[in-house]
Length: 414
Length: 224
Image 1 (cartoon, each protein chain N blue to C red):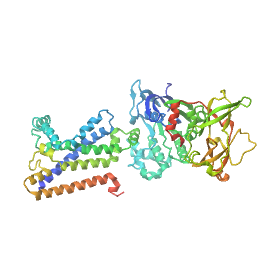
Image 2 (image 1 turned 120 degrees about the vertical axis):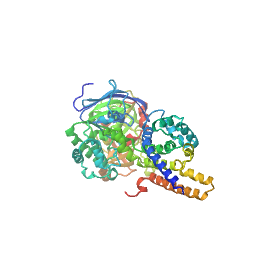
Image 3 (image 1 turned 180 degrees about the vertical axis):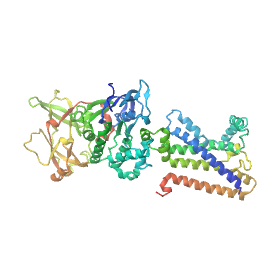
Image 4 (image 1 turned 90 degrees about the vertical axis):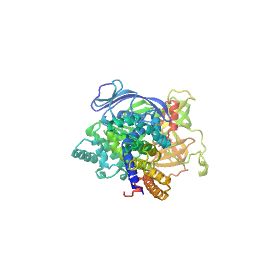
C-alpha cells in the first residue's frame, strides 16, 4: 500500500465470516477512505459492519493492516493491535447506544475524561450548536425524539475529535428530510476537521444523497468503487442493480433482433425482484372482481441490442422512477414499450407513491402523490405504462447462492 | 427470644453479603464476558452449593479449615488461633454456601446490559474498569441489589453448614436457625415459634422487595 496521506484511512483485511443466510465466506477487502464521506454499500451479511468493527478494534481481522492517519492501529505482520479505547475512532451504532442512565450532557462528556471542566463545557457547547441541540443538554435519552437521538449520538462521537468516524446505518430509521438535514450538519462539521467518515448502508437513496465515494461489497469482496454515479447509475452487476433501485428486474428470452434499429425484443418470463410493498398481489386477490381483465399477449420489451442468440435468456432491469404511467392509451409516442395493465396496489413511501401494475408480470412504478390526485388513480383501474428502450438495462447474472441470499433476506426491499 | 442469636445471625449475614459483593462482582463479570470454552465448568462449580446438601459442603469446608486442613493451618500460622468453630470460619463457609445466590443475579444483571453500550464506551476511550463502573454497574443495579439481598436472606436461614462448621457455641456460632432447633429439641415450642415467625416475616419482606425490584425500578419505587 502507498504511505498514508494526511487524514486518510487505509485498510487491508481478511477475515473468515459466518453469516446467517449467506453461509461462510472470506471477507477480503482493501481500500483507502479519503477525508469526506465514503459509503460502504452492500447487502445485509456482506461484511460491512465487520469492516467497521475491525477498524474500531472491536473485532480482530485474521490478517491485514489498518492505518488511521499516520498511525498503524492494526498490523498482523508486526503484531500491532491497538486497544479499542486508544484508537480514537468515533463509532455511531445502528441502535445509537446512548447511555440511558446519563443525560445528554453526561453522554457527551463521557468521552472527554481527563479534560478540564471548562474544556468539556466549551467542546460540548460547540458540538451541540453544530448539531442544533443545545436545548437537550439536561434531558435523558428517553426524553428526546427520534432525530435528536441521532444528533446526540453523532455529537457524542465527534466531541472527542476522532481520527475516523464510523457510522453503522445510524440514520436508517429516519425520514429522508430529517436524514439529509443531519447529514448536512455532519458535512458542515467535517469541513473544518476533514476526517474520513465511513457510512455503512444498504439503502440506495443514501448512496446517492450522502456519499462522495462508494465502495460496494458483496460476500466480503469489493465489486465496485467510485462515485455514486459511476457505481450505481449504470450497474452491470445484478446485485448492484437491485440495490441501486432497479425495482423491476425480469428474466426474459430474446425473441427478435432489429440490427438496423439497434434494438431487440425480449419476452418477459418472470419477475426476479420481490414485490416492493405489501398489498394484494394479482395471485392472491381476484383481479376479475374489479372489472374485466384486458386480453394480453405475453409482454415483450424492446431493449438495446447486444450480441446474443435468439432464444437466449437475459435479465432486464428497469427503475420504477423511469416508467411513465397514463390513464389513457398514449398515442404518437417515441417510446417503444407501451403496456396495458391493472393497478393492483398503491403505497405511500416517503414523498413518493409506489404503484404495482399487473401487466401479466408485476411492474413497479414510482409516481408522485400529486399525480395520483390529478389522475384520480384508484386501485383496480386500467392504466398504460410507457418504458423507453434505453431505460431497460441488461444485467450480468450473479451466482446462484447470492440470489438465494436475496430471497432469504428481504431487507433490501424496504 | 434469643436476641444474641438474632444479632449474631444478622452480623453473619451482613459480613457474608458484603464479602460476596466484593468477590461476586469480578466472578460474575468473568462468567458473563469470558469467551473461554471451558467456562461452563466454572459456572457449574459456582452453582454447586444450590444442589449440594449443606452437610456435604460443610463437611469439606470443615476438613479444609480444621486444624489439619490447609486453610486452617495457614490461618493458625498467621493469627495463632484456630478457624473451625469460630465466627470467621462460619463466614468462610457461608460465603461459599451463598456464592451462587450472589453471582447468578449479578451475572444476569450484567448480561442484560446492551453489548453496544459497552462497545460505545470503549470507542469513547474508556478503559474496561471505567466502562464497568460507569456503564455496566449502574445499568445492572437491580441485579446487583437482588444478589446482595438474596445472599443476605440465604445466609440468615442456613442450618446444615453452620452446624457442621460452627457447631453450636452460644454467642459465637449459634445462629437463629440453630436456636430454633435447640428450642424444639427442648420442647420449648413457644420460643421456637416466636423466632421462626420472625424469620418467616423477614424472609417474606425481603423476597417481596426483590421481586418488586425485578419488575422494574420505578414500579417498585414510583418516585420518577
